[in-house]
Every structure is written in C-alpha cells, then in structure tokens.
Image (cartoon, rainbow, N blue to C red; front, top):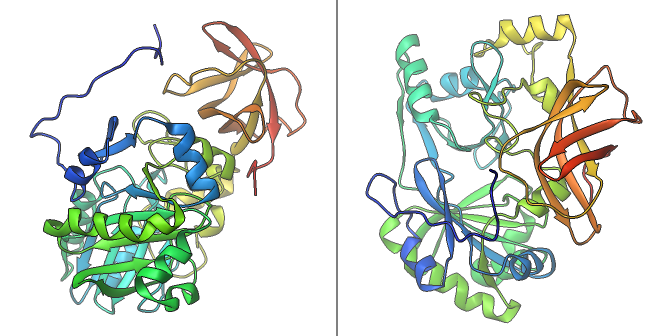
Length: 378
C-alpha cells in the first residue's frame, strides 16, 4: 500500500523534534502540514499548494526554512577544516562570498551539498541540507587535532522567493541588495533585528534568504516581511517540489541519501566541483580519484513519465530496460506548466539519452519513460 493523497495524515508535535524560530508565526498563518528536516519541523504547505506555486513563479513567497541549519567553523584552523570537508577548492573565497560545496565521506559518497558562507578569515558557516554534519565535522576536527570550534550558531533562515522577491528585499533593506551576486551575502539588520542577507534560495525563481541571528525575534521578522510583502501579494508557503524538479535542482535527501540511494558527485552533475588537481587534501579524495579513473557508470537525468498524473510514492522507483534495473527515479510530479509528468533520477551510462523501452512499475501498471534535458524549464 503506497501513499494515498486522499487521506489526511497527521504528525504529532512533540518535544523530540525542534520548533523553528518561525513556528508560532506559521501556525498563526495557517500551516497545514510539516516535514522533519535536520530534526526540526519544516512547513510542508499552507492548504493550497497550487496557489503557493503561483506566488512562487509569478510573485513572491515566504518560507520558513530554518531547518536548513548552520554549522559554524570558528577559530584559527577554520579555513583548514572547511577545505578538508569539501571536494571544491575554496582557497580563493573572500569574506562575503558563498560557495556551493559538495561534501563526501571517505568512500567518495555525497553526504551533503551545503552553501559555504565565509563570514571572516577564521569563521565559516555551512548552510546544510538534511544530515548531521555538525557531528561529522566536529569528529574530523578532533581527529586532525585542529584548533577550531564546530557548533550550531543562532541562525535561522527565512526565504523570500519569486520574481518579485528582490523588489521586496530592496524595499526592506535598500537597493544594495540588487547588486549582490548569487550566493554572496552581507551582515545587516532590519528594525534592529540582526541577520545575514544572502542572495540564495531553494528555487530558480530568484530571491534572498534572511539568516536571523536572534531566534527570539522570529515572529517579529516574519511579521515585518509579511507586512512589506503585501504590496507584492506575498504568500506563506514552502519549497516547491514541482518547481524544484522543473528547475533541475538537486535535493540531498530527496534525490540522494547515504542510507538509501547513495551517489557520488560525478553521477549527479557535480563533477566540476570535485577539484582533484588543486593540490590540497579533502575527505574522500582518494576514493574519488579511483572512481574517476574507473569511469563513471551513471548520470543524473530528467525523465518524462507517460500517462495520467499520479502521486509520487515518496521513495525511489527503479527504472527498467529489457527487464533489468538500469537506474532509479528519485522525485516526480505533474507540471501544469508543461502539462506532463516530469521526474529526475539516475540512469546507467550504458544507455543513451534517446534510449527506447525505459519503464517504471507503478500500482496502476507499467509506465513508459523518455529522457529529457535538465532543467525542464529555464
């Protein structure tokens, strides 16, 4: 029995899962579902996903993404540890710059894909996806005897996303936000509330993330952004799975996870961020060298799924060709903009992009697949 969208499932709110700085504000604004991300409740929707999607793609949406926790590296060896943790050469990173940085374990398997923010020469944040990087990074620092503190700072991202999001940010903070390059950031305040404003977010629609640095003022910040956003018909919401797939964005935890569907960076389009020739060491380097020399066996692809819209069951679905498993679909959705079922997954390099006879098995029968270029919508 798979997930049934007609059933109203419930989640118990208990003390074992943390509430975000914006939890009370989202309750007041009518949140209807939560997921758990980095041991914290994260809103799933506010009752009308179609309207939330419209605001994201046509106007502006605000999201409680405080579950994207920060891992702070602070101390004389902070830069050394940061470089050890990521496959990407970050030697040229300057204060105020963010970098998308794959993290791998010693076997070369992707275990997170955070954004690295350089706040000072001896202070970095990793804005992480859903896995326990604080524990891992702290263990690496201890093992190597590095002079660095690894901890979770008081930092809670609030995202404003959509084609009108930058206009809203400029109204709130000033026109300087328009000059920020993607992933770059600046420490600032709003009404005396301290934060880091970054040009980033979990969509391709544009916008900013406000890293609140005083969790006690979460409802206050939410109210300020909401009030200013009325001029742009702002709506609360949550990261959209449909838009993410349309935009070809990778989701650690959604598209890959160490425990259930492990991948290496080469297989999911992050090979250009594996700097094996930089001369520096990093966790997983030897394994990634061996993988590259052996040859990459799989690649990330987009796929059209034939037939009527269906509810994705929430777990990977094997792809078959001539009766043999040749990959998997990790996420799928119906795109109203494309009027088709779309998905992302991993496919064997033995098969070309124009391969025929690719199928998946669903409860209602077999469906045909067609490889598609990513992103689906630019």
